[in-house]
Image 1: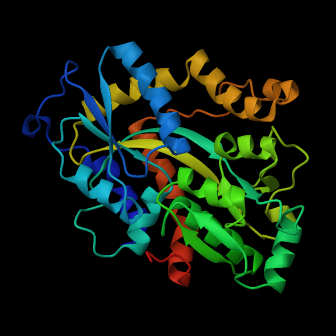
Image 2 (image 1 turned 90 degrees about the vertical axis):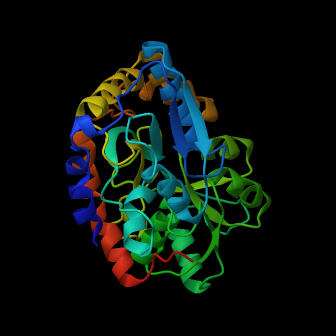
Length: 337
């Protein structure tokens, strides 16, 4: 089934009659399932939002790591949890990729309840200094002359960094070797020592290593140049025609959560993501990595990082994600192993 068909039914799946569900209880904790290895940048970000959610509501939030199989293990667990709003799951671009490449999962991917899109994040192509390339154009030229010699690190087969990398190299007409890990935190030890050559990374996780001199930045993944790097050319400008990738972070719940519960949680998360101290933390995470006051000033736009959309808007956003993913799946570039 195409992701668009799956995503179109997300809001409909949330509209199960409320009387058939266990009621949401603000006195009980919310468990956020993390379907990735511990310590990734997305987890650190979502913990900031949920901490603020706790401050606003008084409700305790706990975290449950269930990594493996490109997030399928976590998805499967959440799909079977009670539909009362007390089990939520962190989702990234992988959430829209899974239906295209995993055909025999033991849950219905159409059934998850959308809660909120929390943020959209630009990505950078970063590399070990030993790679003979100063920018993406030179990176593509080297890859073209040395097929499959570049070791590109991913957060798992079929995951967001795998998908984004497959799309990037396909758009540039080059081939690399994909080396899969269980999470972004596991990539950097090999990348900074040169076992890996490159990966796509969020600024918050990649720039501290760039500042130390253990990694370098080659280009930006989005369609437009980044505010923090106005002189850094995009992938499309450097030879990857039509390439445009930005990471995102969201929250979904178990199948069948009543709309009133979804809207309640989403409204509190919207306040959390837009709170001044959260915006400052996100901006400082990037600007601090660069130690550049001018960069920090450019990032002080509260709407630049956070989104906090409604459940209905999250579903509409997810529908737009499937175009490139569907094409990559058809081409065979995305495979679970």
